[in-house]
Image (cartoon, rainbow, N blue to C red; front, side, top):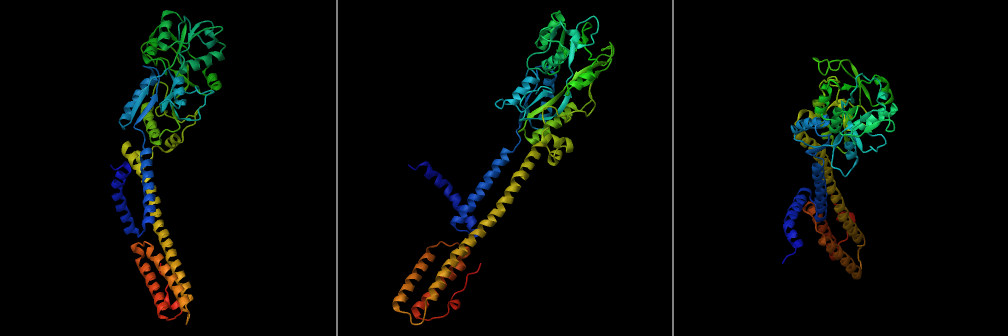
Length: 465
């Protein structure tokens, strides 16, 4: 029973023989040179095919968003709809907020590509392998509190019950930083790490006096309900300008009088809010085509005017803890690349990979296949000239009246030369030089046997190129 090696040999031997004949006929190569040309071509083609498929942008992206029902979760859902039109599936992973999104992106074993991360979350973290595609929106911090009179300073909450958000949320990170600047600590104040549902229930039931909330973890419904409560106030940061000077990633936003409810004049006066920005953070190996597609999607989702932003304000390349990726910088300067600007995403990806892979492949393959025949012809010419030099040396020993013993010795040398020449397999492209060499061997043999002595230069011609 034939083994696997014999079966493979029977399968591929005819294919190889056919390829060898093509190279031999086209380039006039011998078996060894043909094998070299086939191996070289095969390696280049296989590398080209590997890179063609390896460089294709994935058709699936994974994003770490925010808590269920939060603003970031809903934003991710809008991203998914836009990306689906371009043939890319966006898988949304809910999270507890910006802190968890950052941890997921930092963990190379966790399957995620991008995430929404609030600025100011990366203090003391290693973010060398992460890049920002830019800031995509403001994330205003709301402090809802119950009080008969408006409070003007955060220090006024000392000694009260405060919910600062759950572990892993950007709300907790920013709230604790602001409270610390005002001397409000766990030693002098009841600070609770509650999720937004629990904070809402505690605030409504009188269990706490105030709750910090942001869109990365709080649902839009909870924040709307709190804004409508007549006995619940929104804290205005009267020192907002000073806070933005002290904490560089914060922005001052103004919640205009009546902007939430014109009929009921909510809020009753302009309120200053503090807001970090939300950055679209990715791992540094994100495919350039997907980087462009995400920024195009962000432009569609975030580019409109809103309560706090002007039209076209986002996305924007604001650099905080993460460097703006090279692909994002190029996008902000000149937009999408030429092909992606005028062709559908899938077609632009295909054409760009063809240009990226197969054009360089042919630029390597064609010169390489031209060099191999030249090297082979140079080698064959050296081989033929070597025997011509042997013939010239042998003929130089011919003289008038040489002894029979010397003649026999020269004939044995000539037989060795002829045997070596005939043993060499010669491709058809060298047939003229090969037969010329054999005829010159015959001429020298005739002189040895016939005793006709002529100068060597008159008997032998050097072979042509």
